Length: 366
Image (cartoon, rainbow, N blue to C red):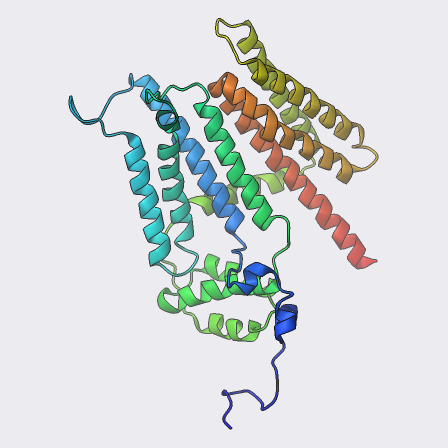
């Protein structure tokens, strides 16, 4: 009887998550059993997709409003920008299906995000009988759609920690792409970090050996997501190190509450007829988020980690409930409120991460 090279007769190699037998394999997460390991950088790419979508919507609507809503196509035709959006989403799909490795994914997020932004910007035309681009609930529908994307991403990637095999799969993904074109120093560092987190998985030694023989190559497709997120992360790390996080977080929460209150006041006192449900939901959720934030501030001296958890819940309530109603009332100032709320969420998340790492480090010493 012949055996595979390097194996011993009758030996069953150890497998992560107890995958050495059929019964044990059934205990692995269903995605791994289906051959669908999660990309450790997926949340970053999805966030990039959402950011490019939002920027595209804002730029498109601002441009059309400033230029008087011109039509492309002459007297007979009207080439709507939803068509360009579909074309760019097709480009993103073709890129994703054509190339191996992680380098292409930021480009997929960019083209997909811009394309989806152009597509969903015209949602009003497809929900109304008279093809009304200015359908008032359209901005709210766009916002809810993107929030559902982020909630789905959190459900898929944030509820359960990555298995070592998923980190190892990410490292192998880098290595396989590097076999053909080499690895830049930055990409190699990413692969080695993933490899370190996937040491417990079967095949770690083989992936490490493959990375060792991959040549160095500084030429690489630019990453529009990483360059931005790296600068933001560096700024946030500096902010946290300097101890400004508490003051900045409270100031941002106060700014969000002020913007929300101003939008509600303008909608109620203006000439329009705002939907009653939107005003009620906005006022109620704003009051709830303020109470949650006050509770967090009161806990700062006693339990900083618990305090920032309350502050995080306050800003999440604002993003998931208050802003939905605000986008129905007045989308442009709601965009400003959304931007400030996202910055607040990032700052609070950075501090919570620092506090969590500190707790883990202290427990390790104990």
